[in-house]
Amino acid sequence: MTQCKINPSPIVPVRMDENSAFSFNCDRELACFTKCCHNLHIYLTPFDILRMKQRLELSSAEFLNLYTVPDVIPGTELPIPVLKTLDEPENPCPFVRKDGCIIYEDRPVSCRYYPVGAGIFHNRDEAADERFFAMIKEPHCLGHGMAAERTVAEWLNDQGVKPYEEKNAGWVDIILRRKSLGPFITLPDNTLKMFFMASYNLDVFRIFVLESGFLNVYEVPDGLLERLKTDDEALLSFAYDWMQTTLLGARKIPLKKKTATVMV
Figure (cartoon, helix red, strand yellow):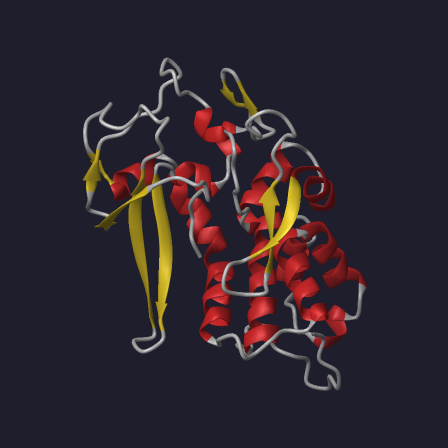
């Protein structure tokens, strides 16, 4: 799953790893300040949406309706929300202002990576996932060469990427495994709707867990169940386990012994 902005911008074709060094700085005094926040196509991850909807004090459904449009993850039929830009010249991000981003502390992970592009290659032969990086250099950006060199790893740490990667890891794994199955296996519409709900609409997923027949089918320890009622991050992790159980047969959530029906 690529973790970078999908702008029609040149990406330097030089392979980078976490130890690769580069020089970059973004400063409000630069003439290009906030230009990277226009003409966007940003895929929003589950943890992006969790952080942003909490910051804006919205439900998941409200956030999705107000700030996203639907798309699909490249190479799959899996749905994913894309940040909806404003219908104005140069299509700005809805959260950018002249003096910067009004939700900066909770900005999406793709914004945190910039100007580094990153992705994950799933090697089926070696049963291992390999991360790769590339430098994004847009013509308008004046920040390159404007600071002391630092490594990719140092940049990602400075930008607070690690918590996002940790909270999205289960979801990324589902995507990579779905891609590894190839195009000849298709998922029914109902399954895709469940994937969307569990990944992005946590408030509805919580209702699904607590108020449908879910708890008659799956074993959920009492302590965990109490956390799921109020803790969005715990609920998101549980959603990944449920999707891996139902979609991939991982059995991360055990079925009750006398269950005759499996919910999919």
